[in-house]
Amino acid sequence: MGSGQGWAGANSVLWNCSVGTYHVENPPTAHNWALGCTGRQDSPTEGHQPGETQSPRTHLRPESLYDQQLSDRRR
Image (cartoon, rainbow, N blue to C red; front, side, top):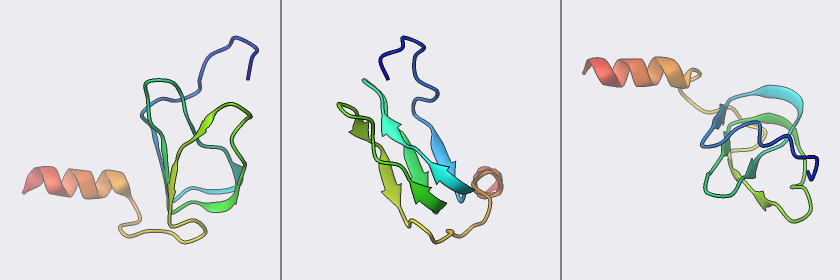
């Protein structure tokens, strides 16, 4: 946002988050996702690229991405 503090996340996933407002953007050389998040999505900051959003306002299955990844690893 021009203040020089850097980005909060790069190559990050918000999975089934339940918040009032969320903000997802793609920093240079990285990608961020918001999947199954409820709440209101803020618009990207002027001059920034939006991150990828899928299934807004509707949670996805499985409820826990971590549990699914752990299950897949055990197969």
